[in-house]
Image: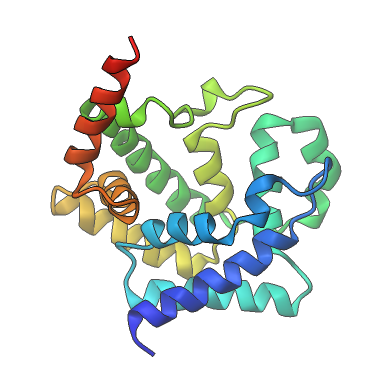
Length: 210
């Protein structure tokens, strides 16, 4: 399989998990939209290498064999910040990370939060519709990028986290931003030339509505 094919297989496995997530109020609209899900996850995996793709796919398959749904667990971990009482009730069903894994997560989060804040400054019109960046901005109705990322990282195995951290460190060393890579891939999927073109178009639309 090519790297593209491996990413597509990974997205298919993620979708099966995501579609199966049980919400208190029933399925969310996004759980019935595989096309949008695939666009978002392809963008998310733009910078991922083959070993990282294979490791995360293995995590999902290993969890499935144990009767676990890592996408459900991601949202459960997010509740640690957004709904602490409910989190305490379900925490006994979760697999808590090692100290090493926690340390790797926090380094990743610190870097990615910085990148996202820089993206907001550089592309304010594109970022205007994004979720808040930091966990301190979480509300009952809106979950921040930081909380969402921390939830997702809690579902990665230690091996996957190590590979992910290596990717983040390498991008940082090269002066690149994972946030910009993901956003650029996202807008290209929707027909824009690049993120700069998307920002100009968004600015025009915003100004024309004033």
